[in-house]
Length: 505
Ligand SMILES: *[C@@H]1O[C@H](CO)[C@@H](O)[C@H](O)[C@H]1NC(C)=O
Ligand SMILES: *[C@@H]1O[C@H](CO)[C@@H](O)[C@H](O)[C@H]1NC(C)=O
Ligand SMILES: *[C@@H]1O[C@H](CO)[C@@H](O)[C@H](O)[C@H]1NC(C)=O
Ligand SMILES: *[C@@H]1O[C@H](CO)[C@@H](O)[C@H](O)[C@H]1NC(C)=O
Ligand SMILES: *[C@@H]1O[C@H](CO)[C@@H](O)[C@H](O)[C@H]1NC(C)=O
Image (cartoon, rainbow, N blue to C red):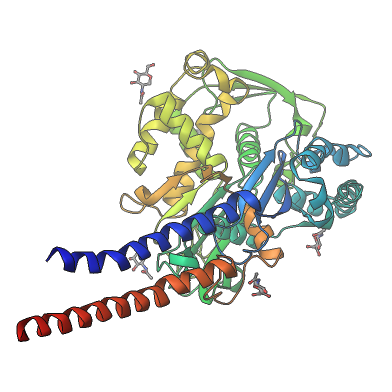
C-alpha cells in the first residue's frame, strides 16, 4: 500500500513543480523584467460650462479587449467652457494650456508623438454654432492650433452631435462595466451574456438618454445601430438641447420674467427664501434657448433685473413643468416636446450633474432617494429650506446652493413625467460619477470608437501570455499528464508483473 502511494507521488510532484515553474516563468516576465509598454490617448471634453482632459492608457499588445483601456489621469482647469471665450482672441486656446502641459508630464516622453489627441465639443458649441457659426468655427480653429503646438498626434477638434454624445456615453458605461466582453480564463475573451445598461447624462446645455430597446424606434433620428465585438445593439438615443442644467435655469428665469409681466423684480419660487440676486436683463436672453422669450417692446439689455427667492415647492414644480411640453405627440408615444421614446427598460447609470444633484439630496436630507416618492420628498425638503439653513448643511456648495431646488425638481419632472420612470424602474437607476477609476462620460467611448480600440467583430481567442509561456502551458496540460500517466502505468505493470511472479513462487 505504502509503495503504491510512492508511485503516484512522483508524477504529482512533477505536476506541482511544473505549476510553480510556470508561475515563476510568467509573472516576472510580465511585471518585472519587461514592464508592459503602454499606449496613451488624450480626450479633451469641451463642455458648455468647463473643459476637462482625460488621459487613457492600455497595454500596447492588448488592443481589442474590453476593460483593457483604463484612465491614467485627468485635468480640470479653472474657467469656463471654450464657447464662453468667444470674442477674446486666443483665450479659448490658452484655457487648454494647463491641461496640455500636464499631459506632457503624465505621458512618458518617448510616447508623446504616438499619443492621439481628440477634442470633442458638445452642446455649448452646438448653441454657439446656431447663434454664430463664424465664431464657433473660429473657436474650434483656435483650440486646434493650440493642440498642434504640442508634440502629440492631433486627431482633430469637432462638435459632437447630440446622438453621438448619447451613444458614446452609453459605450463608455458598458465598456467600463465589461458588458460587451469579459476577460475569461487563460487569455480568452468571452461574451458575458449580460444586459447592457442605459446612460443618462446631464450637461450644462443638453441632456441625453440612451438605452437598448427591443421596441420599434419610430423616429429614425433617434435610432442607432452599433455592432461591437460581433453583437448587434439597437439603441434609442435622444439629446435634448437647452435641457442642460445651466440652460434650464436660464429658461426657468426667463419664463418667470415673462409670466410676471417683465417688471424690474421677479419672485422666484425655486430660489430659497432669503436669497436674492440682481443681474442685467441681457444676460438672460443671450442664449438661443431663451432668445424667443425676449420682450418684444421696450427691451433694454442693460436694465437691471432683481430676483427674490420665495422657496415654494408647489410653485417651483408648476413653473418647471411649464418649460416642458407634454401635449401633442406625432408618434405612438412621446417623452416630451414631440420626441418619440419607447418605454424605458433595464438598468441605467445616471452621471455628470445627475450624480451631483442626487448626492446633494442624499447628504443634506438623509433620504436615500431610490424611488420617485423619495426624490419628491427630498426635493420638497430642499425647496423648503432657507438659504441660511442650506449654508449650515452644505457650506462647501456655497456658490451653487440656490440652484439645487430647481435642479432637483427638474430631475424629478424629467425622470418621472418625461422619461416615464416609475416605482418599479426608478430603483434600477444608479447614480455614479466613476466606474472603477474612470470618469463616466462620453470621452472614453469617443476615443475607443475613433481609434481602433473597439472592434465590430468578435476578437475570439487572444494570446494574453507570451509564446514561451504558451509552450510551457501546453507542456503542463498535455505532455506532463501524458508522461505522468505513462510513468504510472509502467510502474503499475512492473508491480503487477512482480506481484504475479510473487504469487507464482
Ligand atoms: C454647424 O452647424 C451646421 C448646420 O447644422 C453644420 O453643417 C456644421 O457642420 C456645424 N459646424 C461644426 C463645426 O460642426
Ligand atoms: C409660477 O411661479 C409664480 C411665482 O411664484 C406663481 O405665482 C405661479 O402660480 C407659478 N406657476 C405655476 C403653474 O405653479
Ligand atoms: C409601455 O408602457 C405602458 C404603460 O406602462 C404600457 O401600457 C405599454 O403597453 C408599454 N408599451 C410597450 C411597447 O411595451
Ligand atoms: C416646510 O417648512 C415649514 C415651516 O418652515 C414646515 O411647517 C413644513 O412642514 C415644511 N415642509 C416640508 C415638506 O418639509
Ligand atoms: C484589433 O481589431 C482590429 C479590427 O477589428 C484589427 O485590425 C487589429 O489587428 C486588432 N488588433 C489586435 C492586437 O488584435
